[in-house]
Image 1 (spheres, rainbow, N blue to C red):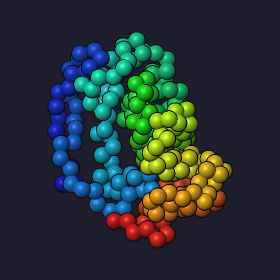
Image 2: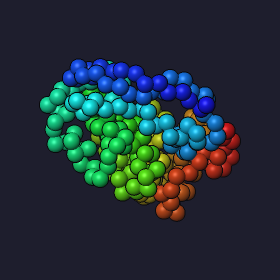
Image 3: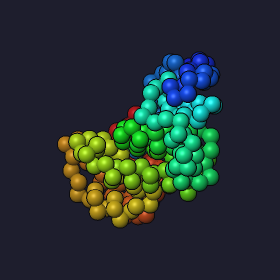
Image 4: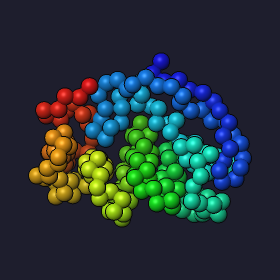
Length: 218
């Protein structure tokens, strides 16, 4: 088994309601080659749906409902929250992940917000919902651009953003921001070079890490 799940009761930190949710309790190391944005290969590829839960009483979304957040029930009934931040035609786990991203922004957890939007995009990729997935990646870019101090000293997010930008169709920006970019890590430099080449060709598709020239990925 690649991972083992278990159903547990969680008490919502916002409204106090108790509800059952399925979580991953044990997992084998991921096998196969991940995408450039680090989405794992099968069979672990689909376990992103276990990374968020929603309170059936108040609609609070987080990785675990008993995790506190810097919001109240008033925000959970706001237009911004109920409309998934303006991203239309999404539902299920993708919508929950977007709501989690909105809550992370409220709590100034900008890195987690970017990751949550990316995870929502993964789920929408699986539904072939290209427009909605692009909207989630665009929202991630907006957070990255709007809060530079949070990402200033983290090259992992800078190189991740190259893929998010390219997948959202920001080809000219990828070329402008990453062409000739050198990192302390040879791997990151190779990724940047590969992303620029893909962007120059107008390629917005997902690509695996083992497609990068000179990179051995397992």
